[in-house]
Image 1: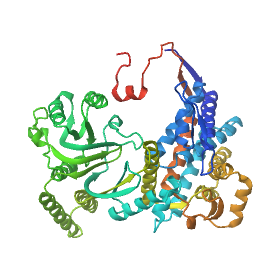
Image 2 (image 1 turned 120 degrees about the vertical axis):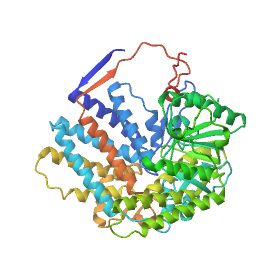
Image 3 (image 1 turned 90 degrees about the vertical axis):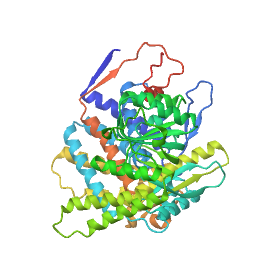
Image 4 (image 1 turned 90 degrees about the horizontal axis):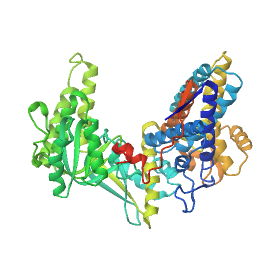
Amino acid sequence: MSKRLVFDGEARAGILKGIDILGRAVETTYGYQGPCVMVQHRTQGLPPFFTRDGVTVANSVVLGDRLADLGARMLRDVANAVSREAGDGTTTAVVLARAIARGLLRSLAAGADPHRLREGMDAAVKLVEDDLRRRALPLQGDMVAQVAEVSMRKEGQVGRLLQQAYAEVGPDGAVTVEPGWTRADTLDIGEGFRYELGFLSPGFETDPVRRAADIEGARVLLYHGTVTDFMDLIPLLEAVNEAGQALVIACDGIDERPLQGLVMNVKRGVFRALAVKAPGHGDRRRDWLDDLATATGARVLVPERGDNLERAAPEVLGHAAKVVADADSASFIGCGGDPVAVARRVAGLGKEADAIRARKPGEGSPTGNLHDLEDLEARISALVGRIATVRVGGTTEPEIKERLQRAENARRSVRAALEEGVVPGGGVGLLQAREALGRLLLTDLDWQRGVAIVSEALEQPFRALVGNAGINPVAALARIEAAGNARFGYDASSGAFGDLVAAGVLDPVKVLRLALVQAAGIAATVLSSGAVVLNEQSGLPHLPGFSAEWAAATREDPRA
């Protein structure tokens, strides 16, 4: 395949052009009153569909100019990265990135130095991050439901259930969202073992909306080592499959080839299986595996002890009614371990924690004592943990799936708000952060330009919100500044100006912070690029039925 090379200013301008084009399309959906976008169906003959979801619009755009399309793809990756980490804020990230891209195009055309621009932008972003954290409000009262309702477009039931769920399991507890397949939204509280490490490959996803894997009727294999040969798993996979169950493997890791084989067999429906990272890190991983073994009734296989994975009998497997995993966490629900053994292990861990607390100054390293105590408390929390499940209902399957996606975004937004707090929403949180940039004392002109680009970008979410509602952005900005109230802004859901905190219009600080960091990050990448290598259009024939996603997940040759 031949290549085309584009250098320096031409490369940067082409990429920024693609960011601007895609950003403009997504920006029209911003806010409650943003118009729809009509998208032509990729299958010829089917009617177009209408959407107000920014991510859907972003994923639908393919530009004819390969250089501009590269910029559009980079922007799409930014939106998806924010969605994965915080659940919401994807459109905000796109709006910010577009504003920064437009500012960069103007500055570069005026002859600004790319490196000095980047340094000024980096300094501005750091200052805005610190300002957002400083102004953050902790979640209190009904704020959990209010944060969720932003993603749910003011549907109150899911927000109230999420608030109830976190009240039951605590701010650090495990909350999941699943389809309910009934009209009503419901909340279930169950026992489970959850930890902050997820599946080994996105190829195990069973629900692309939630980007999660759900396995029911699971047998649990715990392996304190790395799986190096797919054939070692075959005996247990076949035994579990014959019993009509699924195999969940928690291990240190799986080498690339056996992982590809496992994913391919799962995709083809040969086996029901899921591979997740074993809990814990480093020397503490064995202790965490022993905890999970107690909870599920499994036996940990340890190669150093002489355990052979290929010859392992089904008796070493534990039980879990359900296992839910995503890229960041795994939850074992309805574990089949002996409750007496679990209680005994919790009591033993509690005694170890008490012994560390009773140590006198000078006994052991203070930092080491703190880490040991935190690890013991985390293990106890996992063993006695409760898991809340919000089941999202509806009248039809498409409605349930659409509400499920919004509910998952709401859950991630609430989690982000619990971690870092909230600020007034509606673009006002970012708007107020401009004041922090006034404290920067700059003498370098291009540094000033970089700071000014970020400052102008902070206005754009508010401008887009009111502009999509049919309000003059300049007049709206003047009204905000005249109010002299950091909480005053425009509530797009009611169409009125007022106190946004009192109205429950809130943005999680983590969402805004990540959106700005990711938006500035894509600009920094463009500024630091001196050349772009593009693939020219190949003459290969189209392969019917070929799926890039399938090929990426299985590494399978589509011509086979």
